[in-house]
Amino acid sequence: MSFRLRALALVMLLVVAATAATAWLTLRQASRQANETAAADRADINRVTSELRRYGLRHGTWDGVAPAVRELASDTGQRIRVTTTAGSEAVLADSDVLMGREPRRTGPGAPLLVDPRPELRLPAGLAPVAAFKLTAVEIARYRSGTAYAACLTRSGTEVTVGRDEHGVPTYAAGRKTGGGGTTASGGSCRRAKTSSAQYARYDEAARTCLSDTDMGADPDAGAGAGAGADTGADADPGADAGAGITPCLQRVFAEQVRDAAPPPLQVRLGALDDPPSALAAAPAVTVAVAVAAAAILGALLLSRTVLRPVSALTAASRGLGEGDLARRVPVTGRDEIAELGRSFNRMAESLQASEERQRRLVGDVAHELRTPLANLRGYLEALRDGVVEPDPELLDSLHEEVLLQQRIVDDLQDLALAEAGALTYHRDHTDLGELLETCRTAHRAQAERAGVTLTATVPAAPVYARADADRLRQAVGNLVSNAVRATAPGGGVRLTLEHRGAEAVVRVSDTGHGIPAEQLPHVFERFWRADAARGRATGGSGLGLSITRQIVKDHQGTVGVESEVGVGTTFTMVLPRLSTEAPAGSCLSADAPAD
Image 1 (cartoon, helix red, strand yellow):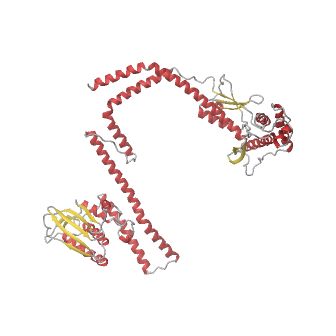
Image 2 (cartoon, helix red, strand yellow):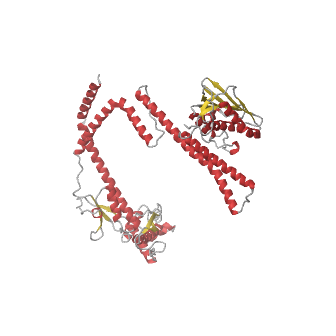
Image 3 (cartoon, helix red, strand yellow):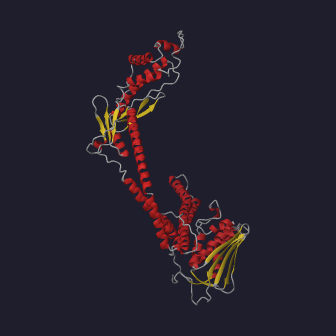
């Protein structure tokens, strides 16, 4: 079947399915919206009432409640109107006014009641006399605490609230929050002390509860029984205070703290002119969205095999451009798109490797320069302060360290110029055999000091290459220096030259300790050393091999390494060989033309 017929059949199937599902989707969407609206309204009611009750419990007053009402209205999207129930109704806060709108009429529903008074919790099995005293203490504590919290709130001091084991809030002053007044540390807010007469009044109010219960016993008799006195009664009224005393004492607590607690609030949510929920439009919108989604899904299914690889490649390239160098695209098949994906993955791997090399370079440079420069600074400060005498040996050591750091900087500059293609080369006909003999002569003193035999083997016939003799001598010299340092006393380093057709092959072999096979891929990396401790006992800056590789590469050559632990290491340079002899009068001076 053709692509056009398949597309037409799929679209017709989608239209029929969407038409058949219209009624079901409409009913389902309308029911869901109604349920969600009711649930959201209940959640808003619970949040508003709980937040306002928490405010009253914490502050002991409704002063300053307007910002909290405005925040609740902004978060819930509800119009909130808060009034008191004490005496004539007084509006404490109206979210319409707080948000700069004209106040709207409230809805016809009954207002919500918010009572900030806590509920007293008495432990089970508590004797009446103890319950009376505990109730009186908690009444006094709450009355004093709410007055203290209200004073702190009005003075602009943060109030820290907790709860004791009986559910009654405890208050403490926090930091200054702004506004007038004084702070808790030196302000005028003090906790009111409860007199003995007040305690007696609260205790008397609590004791009257017993006569209102079904226990029918004298409070003193119940108290005595609860204390262990023998009253001769058949029943012990103090054996359990929870059956009849606890509910009554909770009512006493609520009545005695009524005038001290913030008055209950009436909260009205919503307004008469709030737009009703558009239940009729929701199903139609749902069906339209469902049909559109089904059509889009069908189109995506039809074009998946073509567009999925392109989309994946687009997303991966976008992520790569934003710095996600680990992004890759899945590749399957052998077509042009698959080959494009493989090319992208190779490019991403190359970029990631380059980024990692750059990060390692920064870390290696910092590692190489930090400790020596710190040592130099320490010695210079000691010399300045007169702690160390500037004897010739110390000055020679500092000078040697400075030269070493200068060498590292010069090597970094050479390497950067070489990798950027900006390093200047003066190429001419160069006799490679003569170049090896020059290198052997230049490093003979270093080899003798190390107890190493340095030899050079070159063919009788000259082998020429078009090269910058100084740069090529620098590359070979780096290899010779490394070989001498890696060879123990009594060993040997051998330079050999041979030609293979159009190639000239230079080898630098030593009888040193060798390089493990797993480390061979890293020998040409910047700051790499065979010494894992990176100490300077092995010498060098760790840049010589990187410079050598770049110089040989710039001469259209290659350099490789072979090594066996305990036997030795051989570095091999392969350069293009000139088949003609050097022209008469040629020289290797720096005045030769540069290219």
